[in-house]
Length: 161
Image: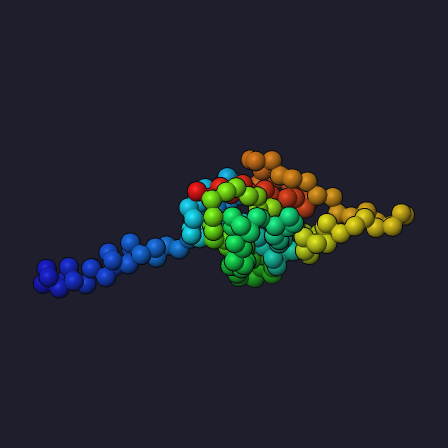
């Protein structure tokens, strides 16, 4: 009986060492990231797309000689029963460290449907006498998306060793 139990547990122990947990994830509270060459990691940010809250990778893009952008995705949880549009979740931006160096990842936080892309915010100013572009600020190192109702840039410093 003991041998059978030990054999059953062996695959679980073996899988635990195979990186089953996935790449490291960093939120808005951890904006200085150190990675090893070849390491995959994710910038994971809180979002509620059903309420118009989204994130975008902004220009300038990270140095492609140091970091490769793999893409983005989202995970959304449904809202409580009877509440429309109340779901929340996360959006994530996936990267692979490709060579030693340092680069910056610039993410744009857009609450309340105020912008629909990073390009929209950085577009040239409108002609005189028309509405001004959406104001954008850079978040302080300790800021969280709950601190503002305005589009805000979040800067991540990535060091690859």
